[in-house]
Length: 244
Ligand SMILES: Nc1ncnc2c1ncn2[C@@H]1O[C@H](COP(=O)(O)OP(=O)(O)OP(=O)(O)O)[C@@H](O)[C@H]1O
Image (tube, rainbow, N blue to C red; front, side):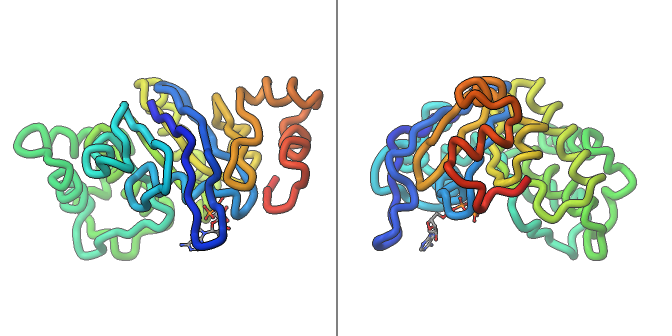
């Protein structure tokens, strides 16, 4: 479970997060939806220990990323916004390298690498170097890399940005599969369709704060709207920076 409690972060005079508080339960997909500049990336970067908050807590399985970023990060798989692949390594070598960074070794490491290759149906790619891979193939490697240490929490920043329809569908299928295995999945988006298609719970952010949270149905009920899109616009007070 990921719990964000009273998290505040400012960059000089910009208050990016203002006592942000929400939680993302295990076995559910939680979407962080907000317009550009709402503070989504700042929040995720604090959770995975790349940024320090000025106050508040970002707890991953009870470990505060602000106090103990290394241990907190061990609990997390990160699907990066840019797929930084090592193009001279084969897929198997790259996955082995990342598994080793997460302290896996020996038979267990080998089993995990084989498992993600199978899970993502990458057998035919596994001994190829990633230079020249298509966008969908690169996405699969990045996703396999985030899952190789079998994390109980998966964090994705704008996951389908730049992906074609096929890659987006593969990504969604894998996220649903991970959810079924009990993984806590948190992703940020400013694309309503993506959130509506995937999320069990939605945390709507604006100006570094939670504007509303609940299931898509609850958000509609709360605002008296039948369409999620209208509910979001009502909650945020504008449709600027949100994509349909
Ligand atoms: N390193 C930084 N230095 C200065 N200001 C920053 C920095 N990072 C973020 N900000 C500011 O903090 C606010 C929140 O930014 P953040 O990137 O978290 O928003 P976001 O919701 O992820 O937006 P987007 O959807 O555009 O990625 C914005 O006003 C942004 O300009």
